[in-house]
Structures are given as C-alpha cells and as structure tokens.
Image 1 (cartoon, protein in one colour):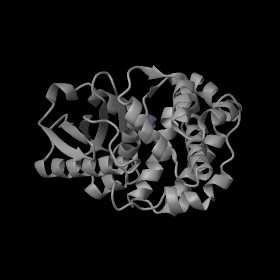
Image 2 (tube, rainbow, N blue to C red):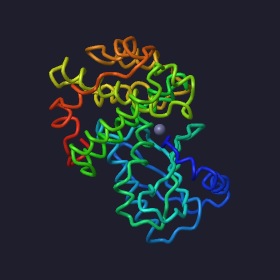
Image 3 (cartoon, rainbow, N blue to C red):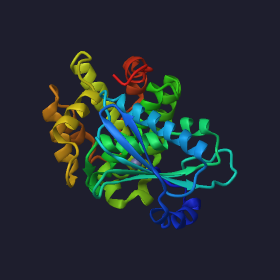
Image 4 (cartoon, protein in one colour):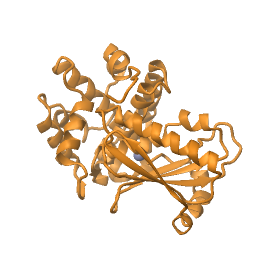
Length: 301
Ligand SMILES: [Zn+2]
C-alpha cells in the first residue's frame, strides 16, 4: 500500500465506494508470462485511457525486470480516476493497494488530468505491483511486505531508467533515515504490532533495509550467481499464487530453502525483534548496489 496523505483520505475514500458500480470497458495488456486485465472505474477520455494502459504495460515490464516474468499470470488492475488538487508536488497516483480475495487486483487512484509523463515518474504503481512478488504476509510482519515493495519500487524505477542510480540510492538513504528516526525504541515486529498509523516509516523502511542487506549478502556469498531477484524467481515458480497468509518466519525459511546460502532467517534473528534500525551506510555505498542492482536494463530478461 502506498502511504496515504491523511488530508486526502476523506475525499478519496468517498470515491472508492463508487467505482465497482460503474466499471467501464476492460482492456488487456501482455507482460512476460502474464496478461493483465485493466478496468476503468469511471469515464476516462479514450486517448487518456490508452496512455494509462500503455503506462500500466510499462510498469508491468518494470516488475518483470526482477526475474524475467511477471509474478502472477492473470492479475486485474483497477484504475480509479480522481481529480487531484492543483498542487505541483502532489502524486498523480495518490493511493494504491493490492487486494487478493479471489483474483489478485491492483487498485490505483489516478489523477487523469495530469500529464502522462507524471505517471511514468511516479513510484506508486511500481510499489503496488511489487507486492505481487510476495505472498500475503501476516500483518504481524508487515515490515516484510511493505519493506520489500519499498525496496523494489526504487530498484525497479532505476532499472527502467526512471531514476538514475544516484537518485535511487538517495531515495533509499532518505527512506532509511526516516525509518531510523521513527520509533527507535521499537523492533520491526513491535512496530508492525503497533500499526502503520503509529510507526509507518519504521515498518516500511526497516523492511526495505533488510531487503537490501539480503540482496547484497546473497550476491556476495554466491559470487553474483544469486540475488533477491533469483530467489524470488524460485519462490514464484514453487509457490505463487499462494493461498492464505504466511508468517514472516515461514516466508523467510522458504526463501532460505530456495537459496544456496541462507541469509533471510539470520537477518530475521538479528533484526526482527531488535529495537533500533539496521546499519545501512556500508550497503548504500557498495558498488554492487550502484553497478549491478540498479543498473539500467534494456529488456525484462
Ligand atoms: Zn505497500
């Protein structure tokens, strides 16, 4: 879920009750290994809707840059048109979320009046689609689902050329700083228990830090053969789409069983119930992050 600007919550929440009743024509786009069905919950100009479909195809390709294919074969994407306030710094996609009752569905609130370039520059859809790389994780370890999506939103924006590697590193660094100053007295698990409203940055960015540390460790221990991408690719082959909720330790144990070098449970044991925030300075200046993880890709493979 994209962290929601609280001032907008009331108005957008009202809009959210309407769309299913007025769902418009469905369009489909291909991604590697998947067909996405895109619905518009409201009237949108034909040219604008085509631009939005092209943008969704681009985001689906971005997410396929993890392991060469989209994680779910037939997801739905619901575009809920909004009219944003004319603020230059407002996101054109002020809210998004994934629901998985039945078909996995990515809901995106999109300000259809904004220039299409603004959509390509925004990370919300990349974040939401990245949630599909993981199964549903128990709310008690929400830092895993939100953290991995927050990590990949930056990684994938860089791979697709939307961010320079330097900008992606800066975004990660700024996120980690917000996380470090959020509830330093709580562990990630305790922050998840307390809830997003009380510990949002702790939840999102402690998990992103652990995802980065896992990615670097996998690459280092395997001489570059393994990475978070390859392990999640094996997870997709064995276990997606997944039924029900996974606890954090179930998920991390499974990832370790799919890797030559277990890194996830050691990180869990080190950080999940430990107050404070993982040290990230060395990781952020590791050339593997800049030169490998964030390297621009010209294809999804
Ligand atoms: Zn999220």
